[in-house]
Amino acid sequence: MLLAVSVQCVCAEQASVQGTRVWTDPEKTRLVFETSSAITHRIFPLDEPDRLVIDLDDATMQSNLPKVDLGDPVLVGLRGGVRGGSHLRIVLDLKQPVRAKSFALSPNERYGHRLIIDLTPKDGSSVRRVALPSFPNSGVRNGGGRPGRGPAVIVAIDAGHGGEDPGAIGTAGTLEKDVTLAIARELAKLIDREPGLDALMIRDGDYYVGLRERIAIAREGRADLFVSIHADAFSNAKAKGSSVYTLSYGGASSEAAKWLASRENSADLIGGVDLSTNDDLLATVLMDMTQNATIEHSTEAATMVLANLGRLGAVHRGDVQRGGFAVLKAPDVPSILVETAFISNPEEEKRLRDRGHQRELAEAILAGVLGYFRKYPPHGMLVDASPQGGGGGGGAREYVIGPGDTLSGIAKQHSVSISALRARNGLNDDMIRVGQVLAIPEDS
Image (cartoon, rainbow, N blue to C red; front, side, top):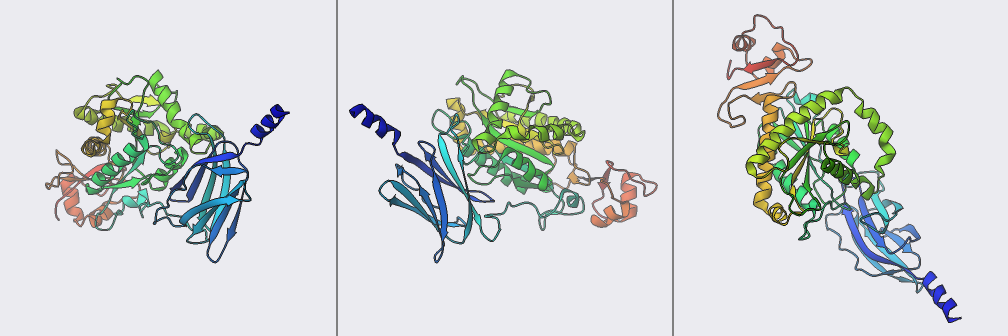
């Protein structure tokens, strides 16, 4: 009889909420409840003032509720208490009415059971809109760009991982997602200081962005180059050095690259999206003929970035590696993935945490990016053709002819006469062709 009672108690054991997190990304505020087992729940709103109630059945709270950032667009705070003796009630105090979407995630290699609740404003507006440039890629060639800056090349900077996906974790507890964001921010600042370049941050905070969504943001922003920043990890703590990857059709070029591709791609599953459900669509995209040229340009950019990282410190491999990284599969945007160092190596982990070293890594990546764009400027882009490039020392300027360009239009855009433009380039008439490079005279 005692045994039967004991078994009954085990079966009726309450679920426990072992941790709660709040993430805010450009589209939503996300609550994550880590639970000891699957849990049933109900959600309903209250008004005057606006609140959202989450009832968790047969559950206990074993952790404190997190504090909410004052800048969160929808949340004021969270509070909780026991309901009916054995149930848990969480109340969200709100700044505005919201729509709530909830779903459960099964355990994986990193997390146990999770209950996810996404909040978006009821009026349909985004929580915080992505700061995309106000000009499309074609507009850049017609004098677009940020006010006062003139034409600009757009570099999409992707800080790997984020939010629910911390990435690799160093022996001292350093999170890859924190390191990648710090380096990405340094790189963005450097890019924005360069005449003719604008940075587009794929994520600029601690939140998760799906791998496919990263590509979509870059393409929507008309990026001319996509740079994904990561920190490597390996079972051997002595592994060290930087690596740069581009996309490979047939898979990875080494066993290490295959392992890395699998590790990075699994982030979508960790973030709550099963990447495997989109294989057919992805295969269709990869068959696009434009991918051939994109991969060639990706390799050129990767080679220059790797060379500059090699001047800063050790490289893991002396040549550009290839892998099946989902984040590199934009069909029309040259894309590279930079493994800045091995976070699993204690010495490199320490350097990755250092603000000065983060800046040096950003400077090395920038040098490679500038070298690539000097060699392959986008159509219609005005570039500095001085020996050092971008030095601001009055070097010659060059313009790459794009579709729809005319000699008279180029002359007007750069405030020079057509005759001066012809003379500077040895032209006998106004015939020009796409891809042709024109030197722009300093004055008319």
